[in-house]
Amino acid sequence: MYKEFSNINKLHNCQLVCLIGESFLTKISHFSASSLCFEKKDLKQDLDKKVTIKVAKENNQNINVKLSGYFTTDKENYLSFIIEEKDQVFFFDYVTERRKEEHLDLCLYQDVEAKDQFTGFSSFSLIPESLPELDFDDIKYDQIFLGKKFSAPILITGMVGGVKQAVFINENLALAASKLNIPMGIGSQKLAVENPKFNTKFELKNKFPNLFLIGNLGFTDLILQKDPVSYCRKAVEMIQADALAIHINVLQECLQPEGNTRFKGAYQVIERICENLAVPILIKEVGSGLSPQTAKRLKACGVSALDVGGKGGTSWNYIEHLRSNKNSIEKPRETFRDWGIPTAFALGTLSNEKLGIPLVATGGIRNGLMIAKACAIGAQMVGIGLPLLQAAAQSEHAVVDKIKNYIHELKVSLIGTGSKSLASLNNKICVGRPFESQFKSQIFKNLN
Ligand SMILES: Cc1cc2nc3c(=O)[nH]c(=O)nc-3n(C[C@H](O)[C@H](O)[C@H](O)COP(=O)(O)O)c2cc1C
Image (cartoon, rainbow, N blue to C red):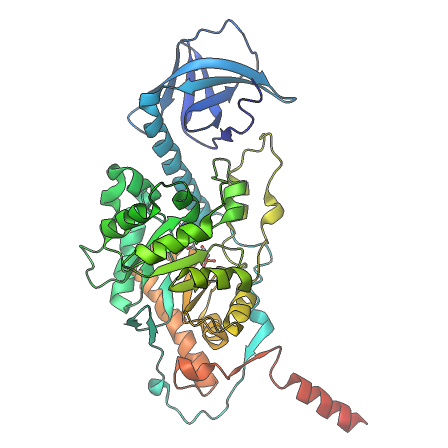
């Protein structure tokens, strides 16, 4: 029995409760798409087999299950159940929705960034120009990306979608993005593609027809599809997306209790999608940082842009640790909080490869100076997630104010280096501190 459930996932902080007979209530502790189990301290083999699983948040909906057995680990005893087929889709959607809510709650109310917050940008400096021979108003910072001209090199990176709270957040982000003429991504559309019930939560283009909207799916979801191209088309058509981001997040899937760990065949699937989809495909790493080897193979698949998705900002490996149950059978997963190539280093190495496709720098970008450095290192666009999510949870104005602030700092960085536009930034960056070695050798000479 233990073997049968050894790779069952755990369900954390979920509102599912199990009512055994009339009185015994307990929380579900493990689950898969078709079965679940819960801890029971005093295991009784003659347990009443009529068990009702109540889902608290959805009109007290019941899931019908059949007792299938029990198993014991060195810590606990578990009862296990098979979910009746007719309830499996509901259960799966329910769990996915709860997971997204948990992610959102953690991102809004807890520290979820890399512990050291090291993005690598502090290792670079822009080279100051004391007398720029420019007026502040002369500074241009517009950028062309995926065939469209945007007012600033800022991309609101894909975050939420599908769940109820996401509607308010996405609308605030979309309002700000269309007002400021910058592109916006949405969070994974997996739920909506697989269940039409969630479609309505993505209606942004109707309200903001000029918005450049980037759809989003995970590569692990695509690998599982018989027809990944149609799956992607469905996602694009559903929101009238101008581009599609495919996120790659291997470590998070491995650390996530219900994660999908089938990774083989990714390049082949991505190539098929690039060949057959009418919109540009952006491949988006989420925290590990793309290496040049991976980037070159992705370029050969025909992708239109790459988001380096480096380390230093939101740490999904840590978020999954926060979600995990303290009493879980597996070990705690804080280990990978600071995993990944820091964003600036991933960007620098990829930029050096001169791949000929636009690079987006996402991961821990928190001010306009970082945006300027990223552009100087070779990013066409800079993706910002967490701070804009937190602003969007307040209001559209909070998002606009935050982005305007980034833009102002970007302009200050441009004038401070004597750069009239983003293009002239690329020879204004150095590793370390500008003039430091010259200064040191000068001092040394004088002292001798
Ligand atoms: C609440 C939340 C949900 C996210 N969901 C997705 C997602 O569904 N798909 C995706 O590609 N990235 C997702 N991300 C990752 C962001 O797009 C971004 O890559 C990451 O947060 C790093 O940027 P940051 O450090 O500025 O937050 C999400 C981020 C947050 C904060």
